[in-house]
Length: 160
Image (cartoon, rainbow, N blue to C red; front, side):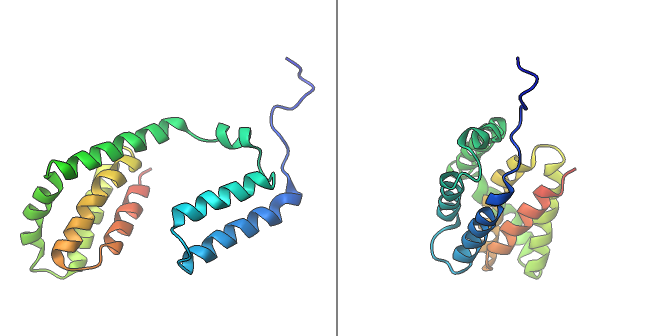
């Protein structure tokens, strides 16, 4: 082991304008609905790698593969909940209770459910499992599901 060689690479400050331009381009293209955000993110990542703002080995080393594995596993659980009919069953049980109230009460209920669950399991798991429930509940109440999904994301991120 050579102690005279640094283990980490220095910041490439001269590449910062490129990285900032890529971020702004992705945000602008997403806001103009040019293509889905996932595709834009992949294009942005490719642009950052091609312009050498970050080296590929640095990018791969910075990925927490345990979280990726957890997300994949929770996606499978979320799909299983939907395929088994458990999402519809939960929504069918909750919708009659919430249908007599303004939609903001259902939104608050989803937020509180996500907030409580995220203290028990990881925020990624809560987001993957509760999001289909939130979407189905919103659709059953005849309201836009996007605020419900955002509430899940905020509540899942609130864990300490």
